[in-house]
Length: 320
Ligand SMILES: Nc1ncnc2c1ncn2[C@@H]1O[C@H](COP(=O)(O)OP(=O)(O)OP(=O)(O)O)[C@@H](O)[C@H]1O
Image 1 (tube, rainbow, N blue to C red):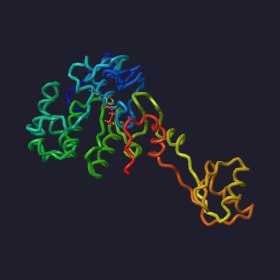
Image 2 (cartoon, protein in one colour):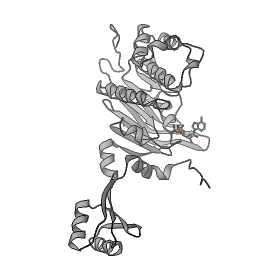
Image 3 (tube, rainbow, N blue to C red):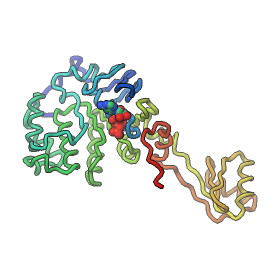
Image 4 (cartoon, helix red, strand yellow):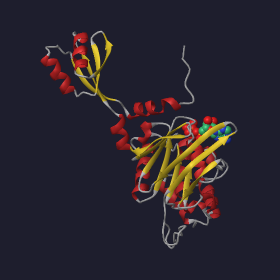
């Protein structure tokens, strides 16, 4: 934080960094984009906000900062509706749509305008441009920026007011692998500083290396709100692939033990909920010859797709 600044929280002397979402609903005509969502997003974590396309993530983020007005329910940041916070960027920094910037302006001109309208010291502009790696592009027109550079500029704008609450909508779009690694490190650092970091994505593969807590929605409704490790423990079940010339008999033996078995080919089986060592022991006891015994873990991405399968709005057609 810039020297000499004092943070004026909503309650004198106390900084509340939490986002409280209560029964939040947004309808567009007959379409319900967000449907009675209740979630608390806490400080000190990177919270991943996951859901398939059209699940209502962007609409929720826009309602958090008062850009969209809820049809029902409420959302408060640091104890009050954000739209009523004067000098908003001191409280909440948000990267929503990185392409929504004036292409004719320079990067530093864009940030200077934001700083001016939010009463933020001008010195912060150079600080945040350096922080996101755009110091050399400070005077270049945004219109010539790549999508990745626009994302970095959007992140710089979010950091400008040194806020305790940060929202990022699909921040990895357009970033190269080095950019992705950098953003992950930045989010972890911001959370370690005790800030609230809420990051939307429709890809679990992006979130599993970024977030430590997950909020999953589908069709505007809450599906899961738990730590990444709890989600993984609950949903990632190892399966064991078995290849044997005696597949039919071995499947019977396993079923007699109460084990779930599926035939995956003439000589192959997939065994659920039983460790490979135990499968091997049973084969040995019953003199079943094994050609292969391999453990697979379902990926978190598969678990996420299973979880949200009923809420996917846009399914690709059969490519025949
Ligand atoms: N201004 C609007 N007018 C009408 N419908 C809208 C509007 N904004 C969003 N919607 C609809 O609300 C639903 C939720 O959209 P939203 O953009 O919040 O989803 P999302 O989870 O952010 O999706 P994505 O990952 O594709 O960005 C979608 O069905 C969308 O078509």
